[in-house]
Length: 394
Image 1 (cartoon, one colour):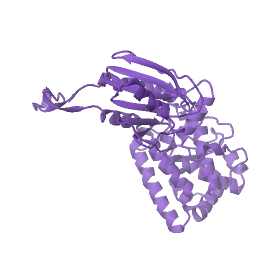
Image 2 (tube, helix red, strand yellow):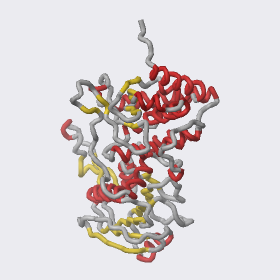
Image 3 (tube, helix red, strand yellow):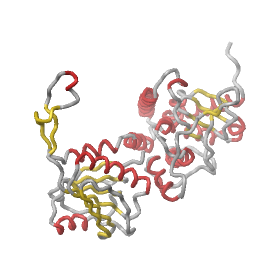
Image 4 (tube, one colour):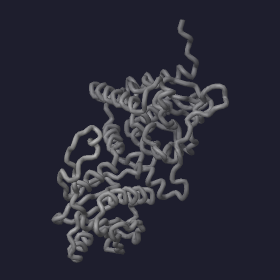
């Protein structure tokens, strides 16, 4: 015999039914989450498996606000927020995710409590991009190690959600395999991708698929791309190389296979332009610097020119082979990319590659140089030429 639902469970069930009828994308996804009462959290929370709720919080919401909060909550795993935090500060990541979600919920015609985190400057931005903006404007605590999602010592598992002023529907990290029937993070990700695809199909058939959610799903997919690997591939493509029997491939020697290895002819000069208009925060700069060092150690260029610019060239630092590169931006005005390419011509050098660290907002040149160009971009604007590598501070 099935136990009768509590008044709180009845409220949640009615809210889920309302979403299923009027907003099938959100409503169908809610069926994936198991309800779990959790007095230890302030509002609601999800780890992509369960929907944790605080009873007084649920009872204190109007029916319309409860429906909106449920839609908000299920968007966290739909957009993979529970697996994308990495080493970011949990509280700041929560706020970034809330800012990314709440505009989508409101645009879908749903209501949210009056203290919801809403800022229209973040429209169209991913949680990662919003986090970078928040981090740049808030001193201290740029990130921390992965925090526990459950507090011990209570005799049972109690979810622990970071406190977020003005926030609700907290996002927890995805549970490890041992806490989820052996399912790996990759499997959990795949399950939600399938569920989201099915929800989109259901919503399309009903003619009720929210356009803003579709765009955010696409942005979430882009945010999961490993920009480091993309940067390495793009950079490696500019390095002349060929196969040579004089340097056999060591990866196969242990098998008794003598195969030719890749021999690089070496890299002459490299030019790195750093946008100093204020669009690159310290975290992104540090990640980019570390990755560039790693790439250069493998390619051993003769000389690296680091050029800082905004509307004009502000500073030039040149490094010889083996010297440690440190990025220290100066400037802070508008952005004009034309002086960068003129500088290369005026110096009379022909670098192996030109790399620009920027958000791509500014005056762009009309014609490309006769040199490979890589734009390591923190923004979403298209480049007039060259290859764009979307840089996310993951």
